Image 1 (cartoon, rainbow, N blue to C red):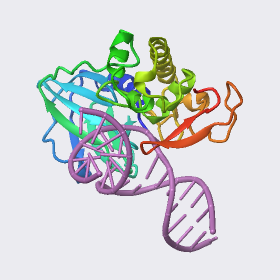
Image 2 (tube, rainbow, N blue to C red; image 1 turned 90 degrees about the horizontal axis):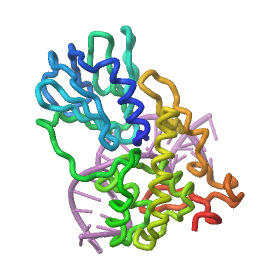
Image 3 (spheres, rainbow, N blue to C red; image 1 turned 180 degrees about the vertical axis):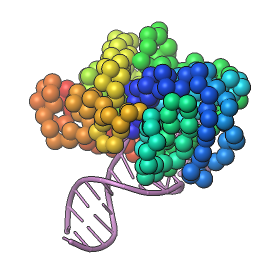
Length: 259
DNA sequence: CGAACGACCTGTTCGC
DNA sequence: TGCGAACAGGTCGTTC
């Protein structure tokens, strides 16, 4: 489930372990990942998050880009221990080993050459002009939830946080983007930034199998208001939380107060 | 062009 | 208990 807060958590935890360190071993255990060549001897010069991707720049002006998709996880092993099931690759560093686990095998690791200047993609966890949001949204008719999850526009919001953000902002997920007022967009932007930053402070949401780099659960699952709470009372208005499908994704909302 | 849907994989949960 | 169906954090390609 790694969405923005989970990848941000990994990025922050990983930095002290591997920044400015040399890769001293690299092994791919899952052929689905493809072959990205030898990494031994290369140094990690930066660790950052871009949307839901973890980007590790190398001293060879290339960058490793890891996307965990649905069930990908990273684990840090400071001392030698047995490989857990579903280990996809291992990267060894002087002070420990970084493992990528992924039961569903959707995760991807690529070696991107040179620095790529990304387009004007909004980082929803930071401050940005809200006009950027509603100017794009104003001409679109798609449901606002799909808009929030469009990674080409806003990078990092997935299904869990989209549900939570729209509930907090009192917006129905099916509202067409062009029908929202500037004031509503301001509310969405503020709520989105706050929800994501609170989730980062909680080291993510462990509704299922998400764990941080050191195997610990996050804490934001305790703060969820609608996600996976179908049939429970809405914490705001005591309406009944409903689950419906919106373009294939389970969508949780309160029909009473999200209008 | 945009929206809907299947595919990619495996594991877990739910209903009968 | 057993078994099949539905469902799961995400994205991509195809089709309508």
